[in-house]
Image (cartoon, rainbow, N blue to C red):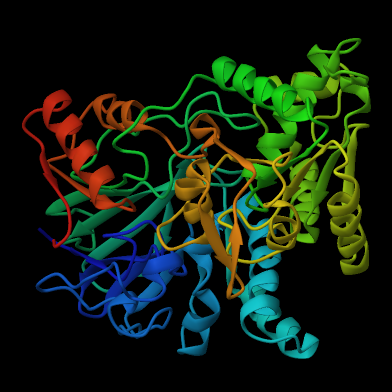
Length: 486
């Protein structure tokens, strides 16, 4: 083997993704550089494997505690914080090489990092602008499906190619081509293919083309977030979402949807627009026509990402483009209201707490670790008319996981150091996950024309990795499937 794969996060949990392909002591690339969150941020989940560079959560969370002098490029699979949140720390540690990403991600990445810097680093506008200018200077947008050469030293060649991953707009999985023993006639002694899946999306996700399997690989580093379960089909989950909304509105209560600013919010809006469109002239609840149901998006960042999504229509799938041609506006429809300023946010929280007004509120953050959703929860989680709908993964140790786990039994959650009893109804719509499920992940491997010799399972809890390993062993016999410690 002419390379090593070293993991600096995300290989025994679901956050902090950061993987290194090292082809020599003086040459390697990073694939993602994400934040640890939840229990993993506190260092209580991830451990160290023999022979690995210790990764951040095992010591000081969210630091760059591995050598970077040999890193020739950082490749970004997509712009969620658990994949890009440590980039400012990487730059502070001295990295000054290219940041390779898809063309949509090149637009979305500065937006995500600007918010991360505001929340977690500084409110000093000058410092933020300086950091963002440096990030923008390093970004190299790559078109999908085209090889990009990375300098790797004499006698070696390294190239990467991005392919659509269907997770969020701009997401990609990364094909890496490693050639060694290259002479002046460009003849090589050996070629290897390594694939880093990033986060793969489910087929038929709103707005996004489904990911297609690569031709082949020697090693695949494969995510396993939902490797032990199956999602509902799109039609079924849309019916269930509509049923939850109609049931929740029967008592004129508020529906709270914690959602990630990018990806989940836009896909959810797309589906809500479709539900409203399909039910014109009908009632969501007694005295409340579907056309009059207000859908509140309370997240400045989500608003900015939604606007960016609208400008990136060329990257939408055929169905979404067709809706626009028919005069529909999936991400800017009549029933949608965007809350911008903090004063407007506080007024909205007080109004709903006082009136119990029937509406749907989509607010960040997706795991309830901060953001405006926390204020809504504080005000409304004790009201039995409130419904909380989870449409995304809730990592261990996050308030969202606590509400999801203990809410149905009338438990409690701690928000900003205070205990809140949960009287609200709690629902989970797993079908709206932006991640592939077990069948999707197995099919990603099965549909390769030349299957890998080794699959490394990352980005999943222990149960998810074990479930996917068992499925792969059954469906793709003869492949070595390994999990941490590698």
